[in-house]
Length: 454
Image (cartoon, rainbow, N blue to C red):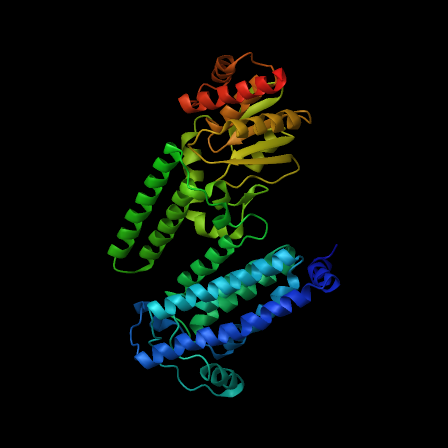
């Protein structure tokens, strides 16, 4: 099927199922709400005589490019067209809720921390002058950080990019980049507005994922002391990183540090209450919102895994075609001849390929629950029947080892937990299974025996 035909499918689906009516109702609410709330924040800033600006010295070198007013204005058209790309009522509602949330968060920031654009824009004549005049009639030099334009762009880019491939996807990326640059080259925003706006957009994607349960609905404050301890460590590290960023007095380095602080904060909250729902890993990949927000943490987790396993990168055969190891890349999967992958990591993206993929996300450094182990053992037994199987987590030393141990016990390959752990350590000496893992394995084994005894 061609890219053009594939791109037309969601539009046809929307027309056939009457989703356009639902979309129209949302637009009838979102349109007026946008202009009223945005205009209110603008008026408040103007009446207050706001003069504060956040500007980097190098921004004076940014040229004014009148023609970029065209991509700047195009976001208004994309705002409405995005609803036609939704293939279900759920997608329509999630898109609308993302746009509404971005509006609410941004306007709240405009009211709490009003800023003004510092540069004078010279008069613009020619074919693009009318578009600038039209913009100036509504948009005053306020409502700066976070850029609502950029926040909405991130949301719309994710909707337009979903399901696209090849030239169509390249066009989406290129036009989104052009819109993003245009907020600077039309003298509408300073640079600080761009990353803060992108943060708001990513947050909205994360809050309202297309497929996963919204993380706020999944929140359950953990009673597990280990998870609370890890949450405290991540949140403390996030606070320290944020303090260093603010102590730097601005600059590009501070923005990178703040991104890391956001990623560590969200990771800490996942341990505290969101669980794996906060990491939003589905079919081996995090959602777009989670990938954007957690990129520093994901990169750090990947680097940490590679450093710990650099002397033992290959998986080990445990029994009957089942191997345990670190999360592989596609080349390792092909080199090992694996036909299946059982992935227990919640924080790292899995390789894609022709093998059968089974994802059972589990938090790192936390012992799995007996129910998780039972589910993992069942999935391992099912998947191994199709050929060589790799059971993995970030390092291949705890979560995957615990799952394989449960499989050994529940399938009768080991008579008890001690024998299963001994088998694992004989085949893969690096495994780390502490008292909490052993207790979970024993509870899983006991529950299995009780069911069969009944």
